[in-house]
Image 1 (cartoon, rainbow, N blue to C red):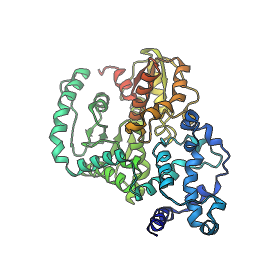
Image 2 (cartoon, rainbow, N blue to C red):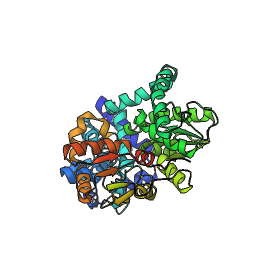
Image 3 (tube, helix red, strand yellow):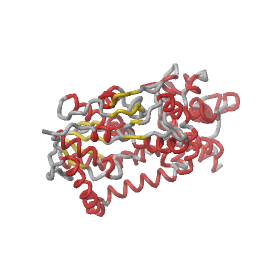
Image 4 (tube, rainbow, N blue to C red):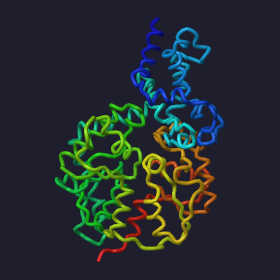
Length: 422
């Protein structure tokens, strides 16, 4: 009886989220199989549990069991299932493996958003106390930092001293700074953990004479990967509250596609309020700075063959295709496009929090084979990608499959090829 009650509570997660979009996704799938050739994980493993339609089917079966007349009395006729331990095990395995690349949605004739459906799956897993332990730990650490920022502030400021000296050496300007907690600045830049995402931007902003300040918090949001919207909002609140306090007119997110997605497309719905500042990604900002003439790039300065990897969150999920390419092409003598590319590009295999899961290392490197094939086909020696998770995955692929490539962020590419200021 207790087990039946627990199962009904888990099924109620679907009921809470039941809206027209969810009903459409549940009802419309014809199991045509077109998504199988679109998913890098299924293509690499041949395992049906990684088939996008199958991932969604697990949610659909619980719905059929509890929310259809036939399912309540004769569930086996329509493949209705209880959300028991066996189903939850399967749901965990398939849901937290998904990178959220949405390539399957692009190829689906009905545009079924598997990633959105898996948000329901993650909510069920969290309700059952079976969310990803490592993502829970990382999200909790971010919340703790937000609640105790004064304990971290001196360490952060101390770590920036050496980085600021590097900025001064690179720019040749002893007055160059990395401003922190500057009230009334035009923009607040939100970096990732580590100064490697601060240094190139500080150089670029100095050249552009941009009025900016650095956030005390990191852009990454593991609550989003975990699937806990409340926790994801709490983590994002740190940045929003800081931006409000400093009265900036825009925030600029680092090369972190999911962080941009959270702040640009999701936060206002969670908070039920309109943000008082503009949200931008560093990719579009760098492009705007070049287009406006505020910074200039050394034309054709890179002789080696260069290719560009479209991060799923930056490309398919945010729409930045031409802006990064224009920057890469400007400094490359030999630019080579991957095939397919843009909205059809293959996921590298490291997104969705997968790269943070040590237990999935072997799996994510195996499922990166389509990306390995793409890179090899170009013959490029440099791969540029404006996503931290993508670069971590590409590093792993480079080592495992002996690609002999150099992997660069777009920020580094721009910073390293700036025309000196007059």
